[in-house]
Length: 207
Image 1 (cartoon, rainbow, N blue to C red):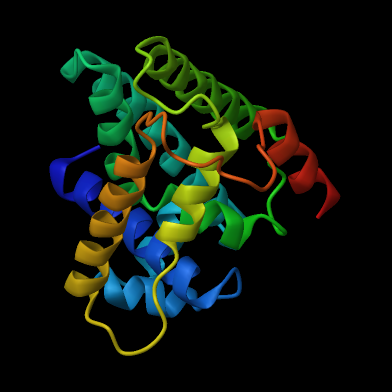
Image 2 (image 1 turned 180 degrees about the vertical axis):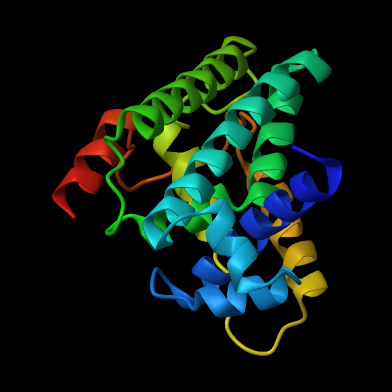
């Protein structure tokens, strides 16, 4: 693929992700093409239909989370720093915003999506296990806490808040949350259900 074609392809996926998050699965493909500054014919040359585009957006986001987890471990010798780096990277990818948005219209058990989800989840569980081994991460922090944090923080705030401010607030609140994960013998129990990966998967199957 030529460099300009590659740029158009990546731009379409990035814009499609954001428009689907904003407008849902029925978002206008013409709007996606317009924001990506390409013609609608270019969009259809790359993605034959809406389902193909949505599938590719989600698969790209999942592969991005895999790369983020691997890079976080490579770049940070401290497991807590690696966990924090992963969280901030995934917030930039907006994986936890686009997947819930398209959850009802995509088959997440499609082989490529299922494999990518499994790999991503395994890497996060490894990040958590390594952080727990240090004794500096609260013992009651689970996979579900990280997954649901990312989902909650990935959704845009209501109102006419500029995108730059939205982005800055997302990372500020993530930093606050991550600070609260550090072990403190005087801290009260978290309360509420401690959800693991299996719990989240069961909830998704029930929706």
